[in-house]
Amino acid sequence: MKYLYIGVSLLAVTLAASILTLCALNTRADEAAAQLEAAIVAFDRDDWQTATACVEKAESLWNHHKGFLGTLLDHEESDTIQWGLANIRSFAVTGSGEEFRAGCTETAAMIRHIAQMERPYYYNIL
Image (cartoon, rainbow, N blue to C red; front, side, top):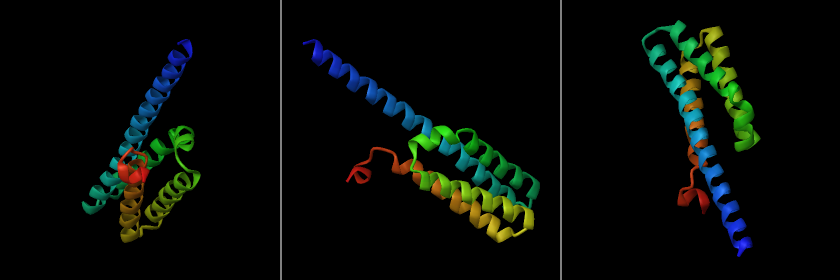
């Protein structure tokens, strides 16, 4: 009987850890994507300073949790986001407006997509 309790306890701990890490991933991804979307809004208002500040904030958020996100995500996914953020920063420096906006849109969509892929929906399992 004690083996049953140990097994159920391990299952409960594993389930709780999975749910907590999924919530943390979604929170971090939403924060970074929201900053990139704020950069798009600022760019549309011709406010380059705010737009670049939002991109820097998104990159800072992503890099701050890089180790945690690296354990949850595939390295290719995490690297793609890193490269996207670096490209956006270079577009901001060179003043390439359309590429800046496209990079922000694409990277925000990738971040949201990566977070959605980790959710336990039936189409993610199948």
